[in-house]
Image 1: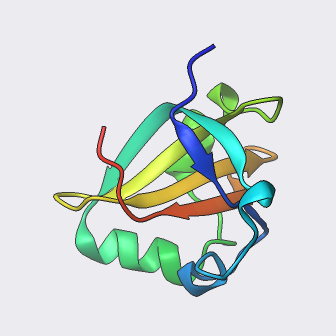
Image 2 (image 1 turned 45 degrees about the horizontal axis):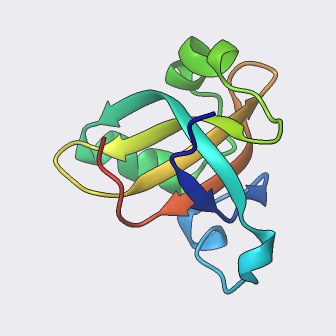
Amino acid sequence: MQIDGRAYFVERPRRLNDLQIPHLLDRERPYRIVAKVELQGIDYENFVTDMLADRQFIEDHGQDCKAGDVWDCLLVQQKGREGGVLVLPEQGCFVSWAAYVPEINI
């Protein structure tokens, strides 16, 4: 089973700052990236400042994501930047769990 890394996931975060908090390493979960979305700068900023809003791109890839021993996640990145937000959707277009990964580029 392929694992892309480990990250600290937060339930229903509102903003990117909600994901950038100190945590114990044993609270990190293994994840696998099953889909990737690259957003233009303004769209990425809109996403990370209100992650609880409905997003079509989450709905488009939500069926590929699931929780388990390894979480299958959607990676949301700003075009041309490293890092991004791992998303585990809920009910199609909502962010249920998310994690910030500062250095990832696939």
